[in-house]
Amino acid sequence: MTQSLHIAVIAAHPRRRSFTLAMATAFADACRADGAVVEVRDLYRLGFDPRLRAREMPDHPGYAPRADVVRERQAIGDANVFALFYPLWFNAPPAMLKGYVDRVFGMGFGYSPIQRGGNQPLLVGRRLVSFTSSGAPQDWVERSGAWAAMQKQFDEHLSLMTGLKIEGRHNFGAIGPGLAPIRFKECCAEVDRRARRLTASHTPTA
Image (cartoon, rainbow, N blue to C red; front, side, top):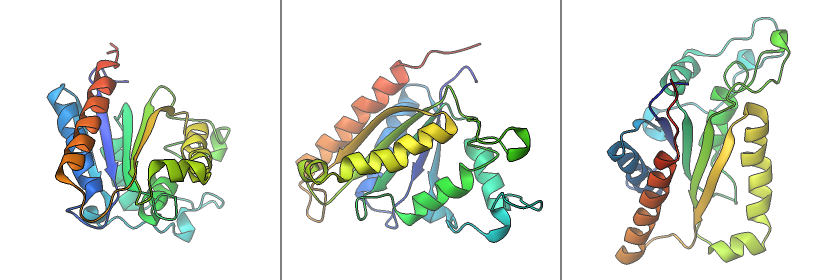
């Protein structure tokens, strides 16, 4: 683990001018202001391919990650914190983000290859934080059971497989067209507060 705080901001939204990307930018700016090194991975602008190909599946001798996965692992490999930003679609992460996790956080990066014991977490000591948004109000997302189900199936499973410590998950509910400017500013301020709380909690190591 490196001494300075390295944060990988991984954002998934097809629109450049979106609430998701605005929150990701606010988070990255706040972290940089506090001295963190931030790597932003805007998956749609990168043209990342979320489809897992047959030769990437680690169930045969010729298994190997493709060049784009190798590049992503190099880009985020030094991160102490992985910050995910995405909208909830059908109360789940977009296919773009799910494919990124499948391909980038899979065997050889998130957990060890079968030849070395298999399924041993490789990201122990690092942290995971998520910021999402939904058209539905937060109380509905919780009452419907979607909030608990998504955390169990996505966040907690990702933590279990990789060893990442879940630092926090925050959802902005009732986000849609015509969002009031005051509400937008409040969301930016909330992201800023959480970013600075995160950077303040980092303990440098030699």
